[in-house]
Image 1 (cartoon, rainbow, N blue to C red):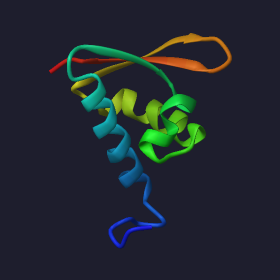
Image 2 (tube, rainbow, N blue to C red; image 1 turned 90 degrees about the vertical axis):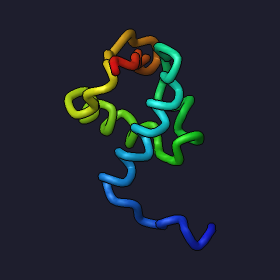
Image 3 (spheres, rainbow, N blue to C red; image 1 turned 90 degrees about the horizontal axis):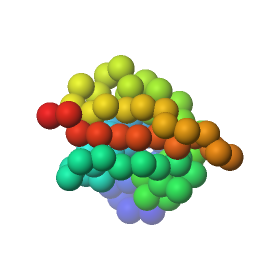
Image 4 (cartoon, rainbow, N blue to C red; image 1 turned 30 degrees about the vertical axis):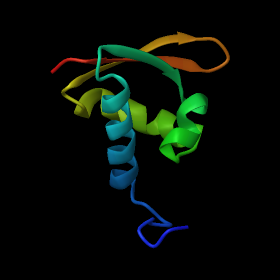
Length: 82
């Protein structure tokens, strides 16, 4: 673990990390994802992502976040709006 990595990030830090990732991935339009497939990329568990994405639906004004489908796990659709 590097000296700059916080071993116990706050909910706000986790939310900011996920939001940066989603903004980057949806930079050219839209993206679809399942939490379990991006967990390693974001450094969060699928369960943490699922809880945070619901919060981001209301707070991320530059993204449209929709529950898209459910097949074994929720698929989310993200689109840049600004």
